[in-house]
Image (cartoon, rainbow, N blue to C red):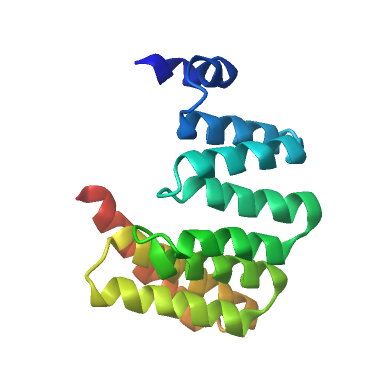
Length: 168
């Protein structure tokens, strides 16, 4: 109940409970969107130290490092901290790393990461959204490669999985 004010005033939420990692990460995200990258980075680090079992602060930190300094290596280090978490593991890291590779135009490395995530989600009958997201990302890779038929097939499968996920 204390943190409902975060929807209206994230600063007040952090002031009410300076140890609430989600509120701190949300405030960092707002500062990030306003281009206040150094302050956002400090908040993401603080949120991560308070709640190391969640991936959100690490992912936000990775986005922030890329936007702030173009620091892809730093972003991969932040994402690597997620990979060490038993809850999220290697698949989350590979999906995020795949997006970094895709943004940098390294299509083979991106495809390798997205295919690994897709295989993982399929093997475990994992959440449909995870597989759908990886398939969508693979479709983006194939579009950039100029392989439109494969991209269309992947996108169709991703949309079907997302629709099933939404209905469940």
